[in-house]
Amino acid sequence: MLKITGGEWRGRQLDSPRDQRIRPTGVKAREALFNIIGPNLDGIHWLELYAGSGVMALEALSRGAASATLVEQSPQSFELIQQNIAKLQPSAPVLPIRGAADKPATFENLQKKAHKGIDATWCPNIIFMDPPYGKGLVMRSLDILAHWPILQGRPVQVIAEHEPRAKLELKQSPWKVQGMRRYGQTVITFFTATWGGPSR
Image (cartoon, rainbow, N blue to C red; front, side, top):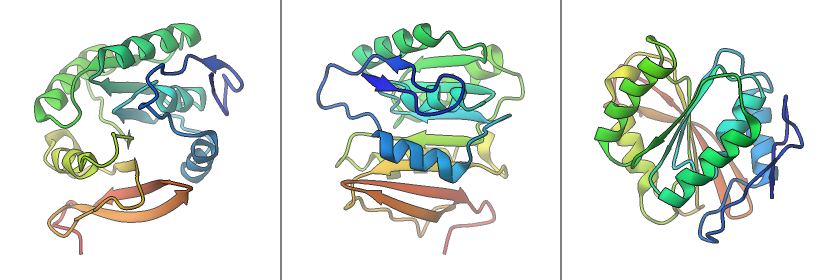
């Protein structure tokens, strides 16, 4: 069973994926990540890509995030996300979206749904992704985010969980590495955007 590590729902249990290929962010890495970005997420609109169990978005809501939007393609994982949301019954807006986080059309769809279901001025402040390892999906999603009109010129932080040997080619990208942390075979990288031009 998964457990929320902090905030309003600290200690509450969530359902875990049955598929052993799905690896939710570990407790140590999760606690460390939220210690870095801050224990209080008041006013933050959280967007999670490749959401899996949804534990990171629900952890963010537990710590005060204003809303959470979760993108997941797998029907089994999407059902699991809905089950975990139902367990906690958050009062803040939660928007699960079935779609592929490596396809631009998904972001057009989620923006429309978020503006309708959360707030007409919705824009994510923190974007977390934990895609399947070894498929280059971090860079694919970063490229899509770099061209997503809603983010242009806005302060946004992207946090990616990936394998240690993942290649991050950022020379022609607005994304700049702000920091990296390693926890065993998991690396968490923090990105910020330099909208004036590609990162150096």
